[in-house]
Structures are given as C-alpha cells and as structure tokens.
Image (cartoon, rainbow, N blue to C red; front, side, top):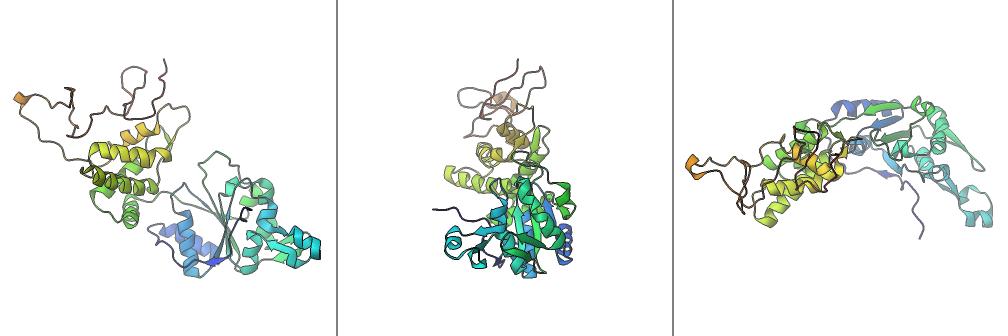
Length: 348
C-alpha cells in the first residue's frame, strides 16, 4: 500500500468553526489575499491559524489545497511527477503527469495551505521562488504552468519549535507578507472552551485560567494553548462524574491538569522542573477550585488527614494532602511534591 500524496483534491470549505476574536488579523489576511499577496501565518500551536484560514476561504468561496511540510516533502511531491508505468507505455505525454498540490492549486486558482512551513527542505522551498514572483513554474518535459489569477500561497509555521526546523531564506521571506497570531484574551478563550465542551461557569473559568497561567511561569518556554483548557474541562467533568466528587475537588483537578496540560508544557532549557510541577504551581493562580472550609473552634485542634498527618488548610475529605509544587525558598536544593510525577534528581 503506497502512501498518499500530500495535499488532497481541492475542496470548497463548507463548514468551518466560527472565529472568536482575531478580528484585526482576519482583516489583514483577507485584504492581503484579495490584493494578490502571498502570506505566512506565524503563531504558537492553538492560536487559530488553520481555523482562521478556513473561515476566510469559506466566506470567499475559495477552495483550499492542503500540503504538510516535513522533511519528506520533496520538489517532486510538491510539484507533481510522471507516472512511470504510463511513461513506459506512452512516453512523456501530459496525461502521464500527476499534479502535486502546488500545480493543483495553481491550475484551479485555489489557496495552497502549506503547514509547518519552516520544516520544508530548502530545495523544496526554492521551487516556490519563481511561483511567488512570476506566478508560473517550468516543469521539465511538461512545460511552463501558469497560475490562475486566484492562486495564493498561505503558509503556516510555529516559530517557537526548534526541533526539525530551519530558518526560511530571505529570498522567500521577501516575497510574502507575514501575519503573527498571539493567544487570544481571557474572554475569547472562555468562549471557545464553552463552545467546544458545552460546559460553562466555574469549571471553564478555572480551566482557562490554569492554561493561561502556564504561559506566564518563569521556568516555561511554551505553555498550554486553549486546547489544554478544552481537554482540562472534559477530563475534569468526566473524572468528577466517575468518582462522584465535586467537579472542582482538588485531587480531581490535579489529576486532570497533569493529563491535559503536562504534554503541552515545554520547560525552559537548563531548568530541572517538571511539567507536572508547573501545572500544580499554576493551579494557585487560577480561581479557587473549592470553597474554603469553615474554621473549627481552636479547642478541637487542627484538621488531620487519615493516618494522623497534618492536613493543612487546603485539605478536603476524600483527597490526600500534598505539598506545594514549587522550590523551597531556603537553600539551593529544589524539592517537589510526590504528586508531581515523574521525580527528577536534585543537584547537590
């Protein structure tokens, strides 16, 4: 079974998620495409790059050809190539040539959406120079293919990912406009999370505030996107139903946060903190996950957890007390809560 060629057939974008926020970026991208400009959209994961393009294409009635940028996207896979069996039978005739995503978009006047632009090999990107400047490309044995007037290249890239990426050459950057997307504001992310999950209120407020807090942590290079908040809400409410606990019980929230957020958090280079500890620490900046317990009379003494351990002020019945997930202020040794898995060695 052979692998499918990159970029499926051109399809009109019928249904697309409504855009919440990003009004300025939407206007800039719309005008750029209407005036014949090619565009690269930069932004961290979850900032709405593909959703924004789908929305614009749907309103403009444009078709989109998708191509995934990676090390295997060779010039032949992007442009197209001759079918060896047909060449043996009929020779190098136009009918023996199979168009790649670039030629399909050029012939039909569609938008070519090239994802992970900075992962595409340099020799493949060089193919685009003449296309962007002159609107045509010379294909050996096939001839010159001119782009329809509606053809546009829209590339997307995550500038914060340094694995398997390369800097886009100035020859390419000089021929395209650049639109930068940032994370949306708190209200917009709450609206997005509510629209996807169907939940509302305290659970959504907590999940969004927690995801946003991970982006501001001093030891984090990249925090969670709004997708983390969406997963957080779904896991949190699902675990609460399964366990028969309040949706915002501390232990349930911690378990959901570890699963929903830890894989999305990138720790800064040279820091020995774990993503789980960042999620735990960020919970302190989110809205209170449980109402405070009423204080007991002094005569009864402090609350105790099962086994006679001191529970502390945040302990809830049915949960285990845990230490805060942050380094101690005294001394140079970093310590972590046992809840923050996996453990790491401490420097001596």
